Amino acid sequence: ALVSPFLLDDLMEEMDECIS
Image 1 (cartoon, helix red, strand yellow):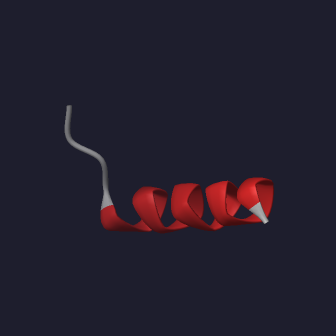
Image 2 (image 1 turned 60 degrees about the vertical axis):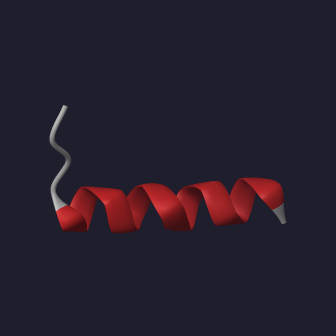
C-alpha cells in the first residue's frame, strides 16, 4: 500500500493531535 508523502504528513499530524 503506497501512501503519498502529503497524505502521510496529514495523517501524522492528526495522530499527533490525537495522542497529545
